Amino acid sequence: MLCVGALSGTSINAKEIILCDINGEKIKVLKYKAFDFHKDEKEKLIRLIQSRGGEFGEILLCNEIVGLSFAKSLKNFLDGIKVKPEVVGFHGQTIYHYESKNSVLTYQIGEPLYIAKMLKVPVVYDFRKSDIVAGGKGAPLSPIIHKILFGKISKKISVVNLGGIANITYIKDGKILSAADLGPANALSDFISKKRLGFDYDKFGKVASEGNLIEQAFRRTLNFIQKKKRGKKTLGYEIEEAKLYFFELTKNEKPSDALRTAVEISVKLISEAVNSFSPDLCILCGGGAKNKFMVSRLKEEIKNPTLISDEVGLNSDFVEPILFAYLAYLRMKNIRIDMSKITGAKFRYLPGKICSI
Image (tube, rainbow, N blue to C red; front, side):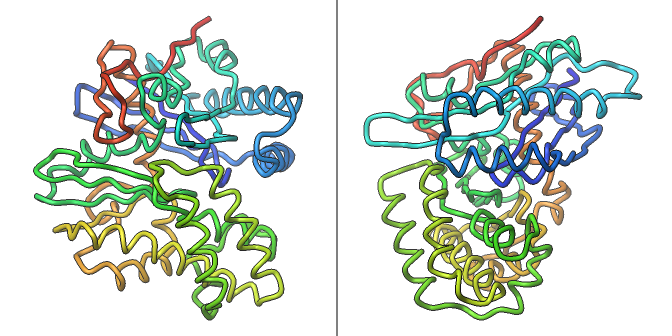
């Protein structure tokens, strides 16, 4: 089945789209492309997310903006492809995710009807809500694809997705033992880069590599994040708070030092989680795998062999878009998933809702 996966990550750096041919757990990538948001679209989304939920009118407006923007990019992406895909798995843009002791609130925007209308194919969406209704935490979802793509490479593996938020999957003998969000991977660094340098991100971690650690900001922010994540499997709202907290601590410091400190916070959180499992191999994927400085620091701090997914044959950009193509495939095939070891879901469920027009 030809399936498309589409999403926008926490940092809103791009609309990522992938086309896959999927047959069971056999997945062949046919095409991938990342599209930029228009400047005004990105500014509206950033304001909405930083407002920690926003006003109702803002949410409605951004829901339309994201849906239309993805519809146009998807049409562009599929122009020239002779065989039309059978489904689009659309994650949209998370604007709020908060886990409390008794509930999980999550919301992804992007009206799927625009995509269904423009492409004339079903769209599967709202994946996180499906998991929450099944008793899960709605995140992380990526471990289900980590197992398929990397689970047979070695006996004992950790897979770390370096998105805005880092999440980890622990795999042994091809089975998922557990998974969780760890804290920021790119979120702090991207926020400082935008605020202090006017760039969406610190390319390859070059500026961070020239900086020095700000000890007090490192300790205080690390402590802030660890307190916020205590007892939680998922993170979202907490990372937005951490970005503002860290910015206030470092706004009078050199940008290079702030960026170096942001990277070191991520490295500490990730390396401790990997080292606690002591895998035969750790695989890094996601946008942060392009941050050469962060990757080099992780390889120094992780005690076991560590590779980026490109080094085991899969472009690090592909992993998360493949996830949503695969979940859409499962939904269209009416195949239920077991997320009990990943999100804590209490029963097998069909991922997402189907939208068609």
